Every structure is written in structure tokens, then in C-alpha cells.
Amino acid sequence: MQANIRRMADRADALGVELRPHLKTCKSVEIARLIKPGRADITVSTLQEAEYFARAGFRDIMYAVSIVPQKMPAIAALNRDGAGVQIILDHPSAVHAVADQADALKARFDVWIEVDVDGHRAGLEPDDPLIVETGRAIQGSSLLNLSGVMTHAGESYTCRSAAELEAHAELERRRCVRAAENLRTSGIECPGVSVGSTPTALSASSLEGVSELRAGVYVFFDLFQAGLGVCSVDDIALSVLATVISHKTSNRRLIVDAGGLALSKDRGTAEQAVDCGYGLVADAVSGRLIPGLRVSSANQEHGIIELPPGFDFQQFPLGSQLRILPNHACMTAAAHGSYFVMDGEDRVIDRWERSNGW
Image (tube, rainbow, N blue to C red; front, side):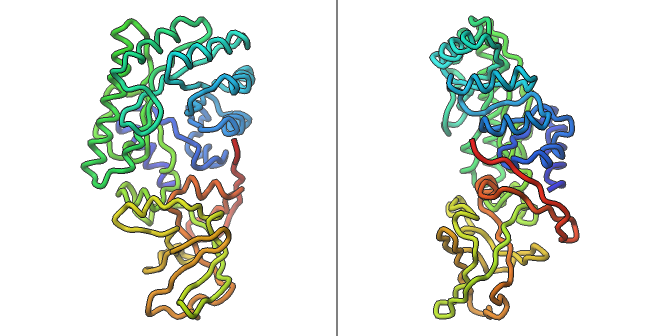
């Protein structure tokens, strides 16, 4: 994990931008302190995360999900205590609703405009006239301050080669910078340009015009990221410890006590060159993959591992343990309340709590 953290920090330095890590993956104060020792410039995806990290002394927090007025009293309360939570929105109507609530709360808010660079989800396209209209609406409120434009290149997850990833990173950079330029040429100050996803962060050849980089899953990586080619399976720093609870000898199946609730039912790798099922199986002590083994199906509390020819059930006696590497680290980690921390010699040295909920 520490190598993954260093890799992204070095990447941001090489590209000449500030790293604003997205802590939605780890949701852990201890890990966040490793990533950001200064406890500033972070990203979260829920109010609960914002409150959790603010209590731990983190400041300058981007809440990177479109804001609704009902959530603003909680954000105002955090900001009165110095948290510096920033909000995002993507339409003039949202600005007017937020401005009305800011008025009622008598509170100031820093605001980012979300830009849609690749049709993945929310945001305004960079040349949409509503970008400028949204900027003007923010400018027109005495209680709102425009921090800049931000985007997430979610469609980078559909790329299938290093060349495609590099091209998508450039698309993300170019389109978000253009949105900022459209605001500036209309007389609207736009100081920040924030981009990011783990695949594009690790594939960009230039971030000219960008001020900050956001990424999150890199701290653990996962099988989907390995399938994209931005990491190796050996880089994956998160696994679920499972116990063999049954031998189904009639159809050569091992049953373990890690099913959909422990692993998640994310099947993102099904669309990649290597389908990892619900997770690849590794030795419990060394963490090394056991070739040919994967969780092929998952019920609520049961994971099913089909044994190929050549494997003996006695290699995996009842009560023995295995590690399962996740398809999607964010979703798998969210099923658990804490992390068991291992050192370089595969010994458990600590237990770190994590935050869950909304």
C-alpha cells in the first residue's frame, strides 16, 4: 500500500499538480494520514466521510457529489468549525437553490462546477452555454465563491489499452481546461481545474492547465485496475480473509465463508480480457495467487470456488484459510468495519477502523 501511495504522489509531482486524494476508497484516518500528512486537500463522497475526516483534523475537503439544499446545514456546521468543505453543482437552477439556502443559513460556500468530459454521469459539457450561466449565477451570489471546475473521467474504465488510456486522459484534461477557459473569457474568475480518476492519473502525459489531481482506488488497487493495465496483481494491497467451510466433492467445489456481502457482487472484470469471477484466490499467508482459482459464484454468505483438474481437496482442508483479491476495492472495503494491517513479513501488526455510511 505504501508503494501505491508513493507512486501517485510522485506522479502528481511529476505532472506539476497538487494531489487531492479521494478518500472514498479507504475511508480510514490512519491511511489518510499516510497519504496526506498535512491533513489538507482531500476529496470525499458522503457527508459522513466529510464529518469523519473533519473530526480528525482534515481541512479543505471537496464533497464531490452534486449538492442538494437539504445537506447544506450539515456542511455549514462543519465549516463553522473550520473544515472548509467545498460543494459541487452543475446547473443554474442548482445555484439558485443553493444560494437561497446559503442566505437562510447566513453561511458562505465555496463551489465547484462539475464538467462532463465523456458522457459518464453528471456535469455540463464544456461548451454548453449553461457553463457560463452557472458561473454567472455563482458570481451573482454574495455568499457563493467559485473555486473552479472539476470532472471525473469515468469512461476511462472502458479503455482497453495504454494508448486508449493516455488518449482519454488527454480528453479529460483538454475538455475540463476548455470549460475553465470558457468561463474566464466570459469575465468569470475560475482559479481551479480539478481532474481525476486512477486510470487517467497514471496515464496522462501532460496536465497543462490543470491545478489538481483526484484519485482514490490507487491506494489499494484491485483486479479491475489490473485488467486496465494501470497496476499489476502484485500491487493489490487489499484482500478478504476467507475460511473453507465445505467440500462439495461431487462437482469439485470449495465453499468459503466469504460471499456477496463480504466480497461485493461487482463483476467489472467480466467485460475485460480476464474474467476474475468474484475475486481471485491467494494463499492466506504469503498473499501469492493460486493459479487457476477464482470465486466463480457468490451467494450472500457463501463463496464458491471451482477446483480445476489437478487440485486435491486435501490442499484446502476444512478450516483452512485463503485470501480473496477484490474486483472493486471500494465496494469490497465498504462491507467491512476495519482493516487488519500486515507488515512486509505477512504479520498482522495493527487494526485500523474505517468509516461507513452516508
